[in-house]
Image (cartoon, rainbow, N blue to C red; front, side, top):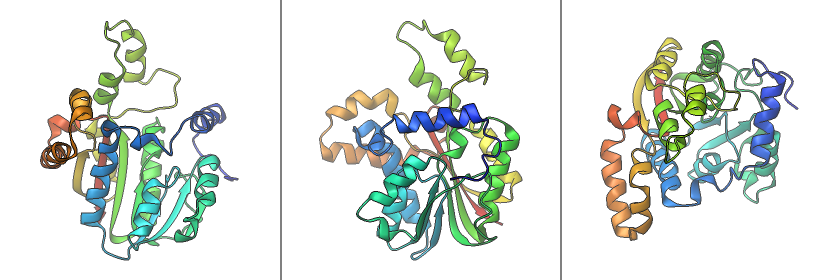
Length: 264
């Protein structure tokens, strides 16, 4: 069990837990090409940036999609997640012994890990749910604390405009509902961020910017076309996406963002 659920109200924590217990997080990024793009873009950057044999903490590992990929690449990966259902899934997988460990933990309190323990720290989900600026700063600060000087911290987030584009009905009849999550007054489990908000928190925590990426880019505009593309043409689109995914005009409309920085 997680000893402290710092800053997560009990009702919010239970909402998060219930959401993921009833959602196929394991298969989320592989149902179609539109969803694959987030994963494929993320691992392209990881492969470029992470030194072989890095010691990595995947602090919001979900069911281990990135953790197992990185372990298979030869990195030493410790995986943890807020949702114990996800931790159970990771532990039940045949490749579980490839991980250095799989634990339940709260990104707001990584006290089970010593300062400067990891070459890379991944925060691939906490900022999806933490709403207050104080809580977001605390989560990022904890990730930075356990990262070595010169190491890499990756922060995933969900953009406000991307969420808007994904949520609006064809006739805009749900605008009242959308405006509630745009201004943070809804009672859902997700938090949506402007790209500048994440960068401000990261820089305040002592990180130096390396990349800010719209991991799924404009895929929600062109998704139906990608679904019809053959593999060769999909790879051409991937190459185009790779060239443009750090363009700020595209990051803002991408549903998922990934800010990567180096600890000074």
